[in-house]
Length: 114
Length: 113
Image 1 (cartoon, each protein chain N blue to C red):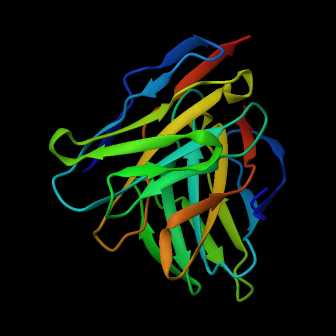
Image 2: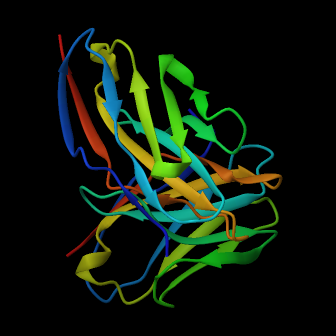
């Protein structure tokens, strides 16, 4: 079965710092990849997704992610974080087996200090 | 806001009881998926419903069951509640043509005592 690893459990940054959150998955076939964000007290929101094509994907709120197939990675980046980016970030993968389930990582809690 | 709604928002039950959670999908979405999110963990897939039929199931026992109605709303039923069932239960809806892209509701927080 596929799995998703998010190695950074808790990240603390100052405003304007650059962000990179790691995500690795274990599956050798075709995958669809997602990043979701959960702001305090709010529901999971889709930040961006990758199905195919350009491995550099741009999402909402200035986030982007790069799919590196050889490394089984889909890291999330943002050049300059804001206090409002404080949230929990989840990487998720769907494998192309006909069952449209998402497998999530355990999440990374990002705290941005003003 | 995704347009996915869930009820109730919070629920307290005792071990052995049964619970029903409800979800209304986003307009136009005919696929509904349910996830369990334990504290400090990512969501885990329970099952998915499409056209009122179960369309895939995760590693959950049969006491977790579901229904989807003709208006695409859905229910998650859990029988014989256990303490470990305490979690946030999330419903997500998606379009038939892109079932992988799922839009989540706010969740129902269940506490089993």
